[in-house]
Image 1 (cartoon, helix red, strand yellow):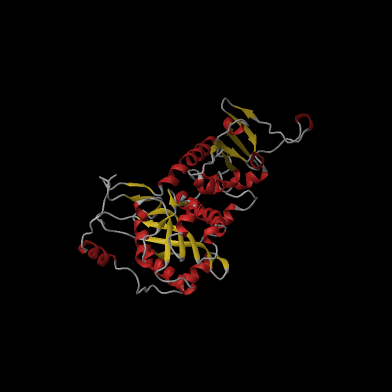
Image 2 (cartoon, rainbow, N blue to C red):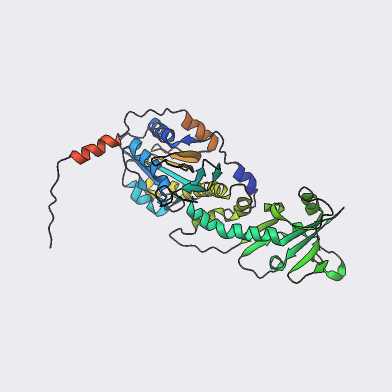
Amino acid sequence: MYNVRENIKARIGNFRMDHYWFRYSNFVPRLFNWVLDLGFEKGKIMPSRAFCSDESQGYPVILLAKHFGAFPFNHGQVGGIMSCDRHGPHSHHGKDLVIVQASHVGYDQSSKSYGQYRRIHSEDEKYSSNCGKIFAILDWYLKEYEFAKNHILIDMRSDHCLITIDNQYLSLNRELSLKLSLEKMIEQHKEEEHGDGEYIPISIQSTSRTFMGTKSLFKHMAWFFEKNSGKQPIGDALLPEYFRYKKELQTDFKGQHQIEQNILRAMPWIVTSLSPMLTAAQVNAEAEFDRCYRSISQEPSYQGRNLLYISGLNIDISPGKNQENFFLNKFIPWAAYIQLNSGEKYILEQKELYDTLNKYGVDNPSQVKLDVVIKLMEQADPIDLDIQFY
C-alpha cells in the first residue's frame, strides 16, 4: 500500500462510517446539484463509474443514469478497481466529467454483519461473499492467521511468560508465509558465548521451540491469560503488531492483483478486525483514491476540463426473504478531487466532503423519468436499417 513507516491502524481509523453515509437515492442528486453549482453544464455531463461487476451495484448505476441523463461510462473492474487506461475514451464522451469510484461490501440485516449478500436470483436464494473478489484474496491470509493462532502457545508465569512457536515461523526460508515479529516476542540472549541478539530456546520439541517471552509480551499477554494456567493457544492475543505477511505479488497491466497490492500492508489489521471484509473494502477505497487521483490529475485529455472524481465505499444492504424487488445501497464518501476549467484544483477530505454534499438538496427537476423514456422507446416508429453486404 505504502512504503513509508506509518501507523496503519491510525490510518484505517480515519475512515469514518457512523453518520457519514447517504442512501444512494440521496447521494446521486446531491452530487448532481453540487457539480451544477461548480459550473458544470447540465446536459453536457458524462458520468463514469468504477464499480465491481456484482448485480448489487446495479441500482447505483441506474441512479447515475437517471440524474445525469446519460448511462455512465464504465471505468471499473472486479472489486471496484479503476481502469486508468480508460480516461482518454471517457473524456471523449462528454464536455464535463464526473467519476464515481467505490469498493463495496455486503451487509446482512438479520445478523448485522458485513461481507455477505443474499443472491435472490439463485435457485435457493443463498448468501455468498460480497465482494467476492476481496473474499477470495482474504481467504489465504485468514487461514494463515487462524493456523498461527492455534500453533503459538503462551504459558504465563508469575513474573514472566514462555512462548512456544511452531518451527515454520522460525524458518528464514519460507517465501510465502505469515512472518512473526520475533524481536517483540522472544527475549534475546546477549551472553558473549551465544553471540549478540540470538534467540536461544529453553526447550526443543519435534515441531516447535519454547522461548522466554519479552517483558512487553508478558505485559500484553497478562490481559488475555491467567497466570500458572499452563500452555494455551495465543488465539486473538496474536495482535497485528506481532506479525506481517511475506508474499511477492505479480504485477500485470490489467490490474488483476491491484486489490491485493492495495491492502497487503494493512493485512494484519484486516484479518484481526471484527469485520475483515469491511476493513479490507475501506482500505481498498483509500488506496484506490490515492492511486487514481494522480492518474486522473495528470491525464492530458482531462486538462482544462471541469472534472470531479469522488471515491468511497458502497454498502450493499442484502435483501431479506421474499424481498424480490429490494434495492438499497448506501454510499460512504472518502475523498474527492475537483478540477475546474478555470485551472482551480483541490481535494476534499472525508468530513469536508460529507459536509459539502450534505449542503445540497435532493430535488432534481431535470432527472430522467426512466419508465416514461422506456415506454416512448417501445412506442417509437421502427427504423429500417440500410444494411449492405459486400
